[in-house]
Image 1 (cartoon, rainbow, N blue to C red):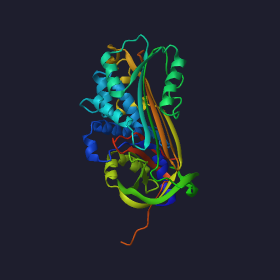
Image 2 (cartoon, rainbow, N blue to C red):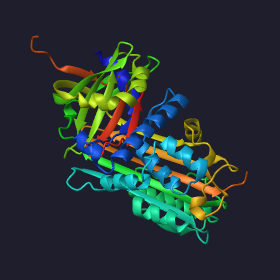
Image 3 (cartoon, rainbow, N blue to C red):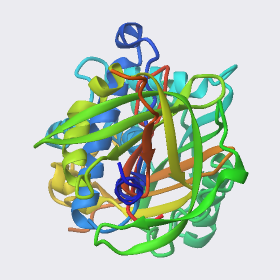
Image 4 (cartoon, one colour):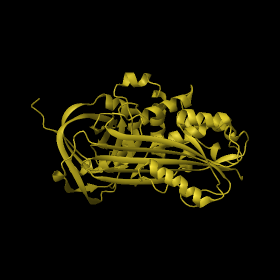
Length: 410
């Protein structure tokens, strides 16, 4: 693979950074209480990724499907009828006791003792003071998601917005500071459901900063820019993925210290290989990871500093979550016992930095609910992410994708 080709693949991948938490032992993970929720979050994460890429095909992207999944799963606890059916289908929610499964996932992600990384998940419900809340709804959020209820007065829009954003900033170690922008909340807002995910880890084997060089990165249109390319050579888990149409991609696993979380690089070997890789990854990723084997790899990886902020209603409608946003058809009566609430916005923000020492990733999601108004010894495998590529951060315990990243212009 040429430097230019790898760089092109890397750009696409980093733009889509996906943090995937995956079981180190798939057989054990599939039987674990969190397994169904992890599979659901992974499937939804790739669906959401695809919808966002389709809307902005030339941009970098960092998205945490797991964060959005958990925020919408809390909303699902209050949905009824066709609204609930659509949401469950879009989220790929487990048919049997979904909130118990999501609760097991939250518990596993929150238990990072001895993991060698900092990994945290937090949920919270912000509710209008004096407005009714159904007891089963608040019990589900507390028991499965650890989401406490904070009462506020949304008529005092700016103080409440600052309070929510301060909570998000604290839970993401100041990586996400202004999740809810001005103008989103108002006097008709009745509740906001928030999720925050944070990860920080050091590489099991770091990159030598002295080996980092200026190198060209080729974007999707063939343009070139200079990036700081980190380099290392040594034994890494590697596989070649067949992405169809005669195209292939290098899959490289970079473990973090402690072994729980890993970053998965997917670098297409073809300069124009990113679309085929993106199309094949949702169904192929698990099989590619199962084929990983130790190899001598000469790796080139750009330093990354990526950030994405998206309003998600359009993407979620495209995936089939329609009624929840419709003032007439929305049925969120499980929240307050009556029809009349509607999802007015879903906001997602994510950030990722990668350097010689390790990586830091954070994401937050807010669901805003308002009153409705209508042979020979081979040489090393050379993998150089100097072109658009995909990136997955994977927790080797739960099997859930926390972040997906697409890098087209680091």
